Image (tube, rainbow, N blue to C red):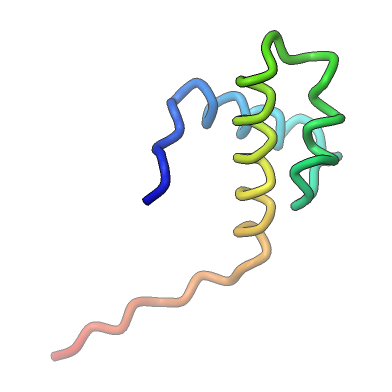
Length: 69
């Protein structure tokens, strides 16, 4: 089971995603883009991973829920 990301990680990743359209689904690429702007290695890696996850799910269509009657 995965760990839950903190609100700081989620908020920062969403802000970066809205401001810049440079990120993609590749973790290593995102990590290199964040290298000079993030204060710590641990924070940089968490944000880069969450950005990759957001970009991966961004392309998917939402499937409407079917309600059984």
